[in-house]
Length: 396
View 1 (spheres, rainbow, N blue to C red):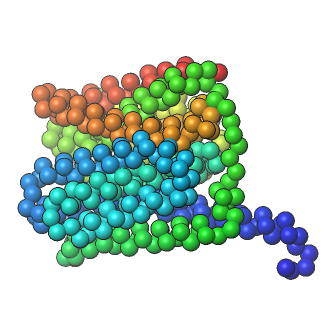
View 2 (cartoon, helix red, strand yellow):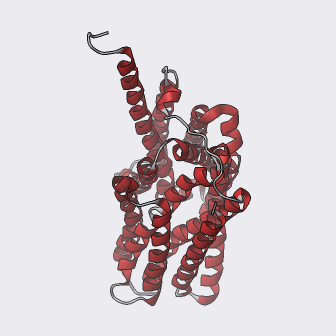
C-alpha cells in the first residue's frame, strides 16, 4: 500500500469505484431494455414476410410480450426475496437473452411468439427489480437517468435496425446483434458480482417504516395512478401519428417528426430532471406535471396550426411521473414492502396500457380518429385526479 494512504481511505475508494461501475452497467441494462421495444415495429414487415403472417399478426407478439412482462413484474418481489437483487437481475437479463436468441433463430411462427413471451418475462423482471433497488438505495438523479436510459434505447433501436435493413442485412442479424450485447451485459453482471464489496457498492439501505397511515390504501392509490399514467403515455405515442395523418391532413414525414418530438420530450425531460436532482421535490413535480399534462392534452385536442407543439410539452410533463412515484414508494410503504410494491405497480402499468389501447381502439372504431385526442384529455384529467387521491391516501 502506498505510504500516507490509510486502509480505510483505500477501502472507500474501492467501494466508490464499484458504485460507479455498477451504475454504468445498470444504465447499459436499461438502454438494452429499451432497444427491443423500439426494434420490433421496425423489423415486423420483414418478419411478417418470413413467417407468412398477416399484418395483424403483430398483435400476437405484443400480447405475448405484455403477458410475460405482467406476470414477471407481479412476481418480481417474491423473486427478489428469494435471490436478492443481484441474482434476480442476472436472471432477468439471462431470460431476455434467451428470448432475443429465440427471435434470431426461431424457425417457426409459434417459436417467435414464445420468444416474445420470454423477452417480456426478462424485461419485466429487470424493470421491477432494478427500479425497486434504485428507489431504496439512490436518489432522484439516478432514477431519472435510469428512465432516460430506457428512452435512449427505444430511440436508438429503430435507427440502428432501420439502417441495417436499408443496406440489405437480414432482420435476424439485427436481433443477433442485440443478443450479443445482452450477453456482454450478462457477463459484466456476473463479473461484478464476483468482486468483493459488491453489496456495499449498491449503497446501503436505510430501513424505514411506512409513513402512510393506511399503507394498503396508499398502495392501491399508486396502482391506479400507474395504470392511468402508462395508459395515456402509450396511447399518445400509439395513436398520434394516425390522428395527424388521417384526421388533420399532415404528411407522414411531418407527423413522424411530431411523434418523435413527443418521445424526445419525455427523454430530454428525464435528463433535465437528473441534472436538477433535488431542486424539485417529487410531490411538487407530480402536481406540476399533472397540471401541465391536462393543459397540453387540451391544446392538442383543440387543434390549430401550432397544436403539434403540445406533443413535446406533453412528453416533458410525463417525464418525471413514473420515476417520482417509484421514488416516493419506500417512504409511503416502508422499505420492506418496496420490492413487491414496485412489481405490483409495473404490473398495473401493463394492465393500464392494455385497457387504454383497447378502449381507445373501440372508441376510434365507432367515432373516428377525432375521438382519440378527446380520450387523451379524459385520461390526463383522470391522471390529475388520481394524483390528488394518491396524496390524500399517503398522508401520515
